[in-house]
Image (tube, rainbow, N blue to C red; front, top):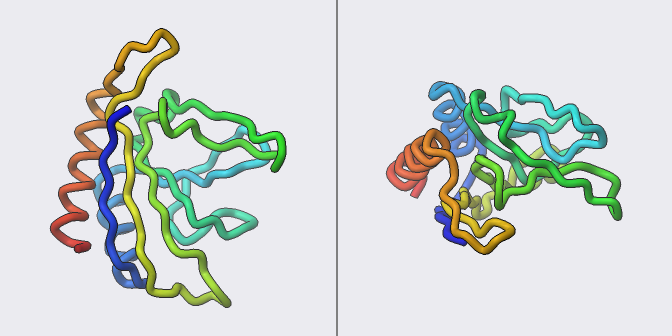
Length: 143
C-alpha cells in the first residue's frame, strides 16, 4: 500500500478556508459513519447529521459510485473502506462545547493498494489528480 498525507494546525478559520477550497473545486464531503447505507453529501466539514464525527471523507461526485463501504457490527454502522475507495480522509478535532480546539488535522489518502491476489493496484486517475491537487493546495496554504 502507498499513501500520502499532510498534517497541519487547525482552527475554525483554517478549516473554513479548506472547506471553501474543497467545495469551490467541485468536490463533495461525505457524512460517515451512517446507520443505513444512504450516504449524504454535506455542505460543511463541521456537520454530520445527528452526531459530531471528527473524520470526514472527500471525493469527486463522479467517483461516489466507486466507493466501497463496510459494516462495523460492533458499533452498528457503515463506514468507508478507505483502502480501496477513491476518498481523501480528513481528520479534524472534535468540537468541545461547540468550540473547535486548536489541534493537528490530517489529510490522508491511499494511492495504491494490494488487491486480493496481491497485485499492487493504482487508484482511479481522476481521484489521484484531485487528491494531488488538494494535497498541493494544503501544503501551500495550511502549513
